[in-house]
Length: 96
Length: 279
Image (cartoon, rainbow over all chains, first blue to last red; front, side, top):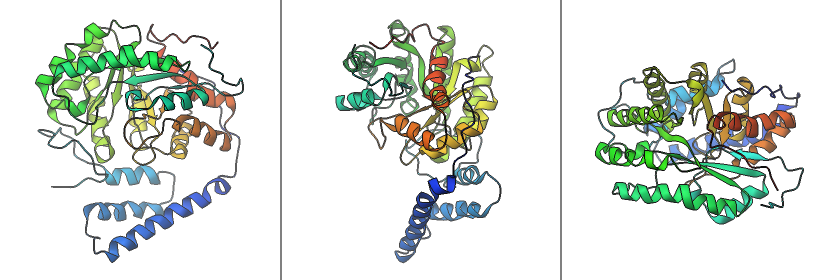
């Protein structure tokens, strides 16, 4: 098997300094989106519900928040579907 | 060919780009950013093609025309062949297209079979995926696999890995499973396959999420790509992520291991992947 060995752990940097403003901005955008959806009475959409479910993981401890969020959005079934009737995806699994 | 590239610009390989959808200006920008090789998997054109003849024309485009367009900017162009999973629901069409593949495998820039895989995780998609894998085995080709989008990715990745385990002769070191995210990267790497991370502005990975995964897995058996196409995508996503890696404390050698050494190690398993030294 071909594997490379040149990887070395990066030098320590201040990740908060590097990423705080970006994270703050994105978090505020999510809050503004939810406010906007509520004002429009569209909070019942399955995608909004999935977003709220995923957001619960923001309060988790540990380092698997993003993985847990992605699992929340995912189709949990295991068998292939009989036929593909559409080609696109929507970002959140909709149980029929 | 003289690229005009400054010596201090790190060279990189774009291992997954759909250049038929991009402008010639994009080739120039990528060359200026240090790109010296682009690998173009066969994919969905944004609409379903009506006949196998349409695929023959497409295969000619990516094996004959695109290498010439890329060469004008000092970039080598390589190709993968298949019918993509979005058009695999029509098994009659899919089999007509697959029948064309052996002829085009003789072209000098073809690296293997891809990007095959699943889209909506249907029975027909899975059947055509397995038939592509058999073609790759029969012709001793590398395999590049597309995993489904968004909510379909986890299930599709599991189905793909299970299907591959059903092939006794599959060497995981000769298979790359692309578009991994945090919920699928361990499934792929722990099974011994290579993994691809796709840098998309919205629907796949941001540079910092990609770097997180690279650090978690010590960048072993992983490449990253822009998968630039006709949708929301950025042909400069790889060099932009290289800049983010520098900000995150990565050494130049470690960056090179991801953007050059890793794709070269995987694709170098094909005798066709011969990189010519820069002028």
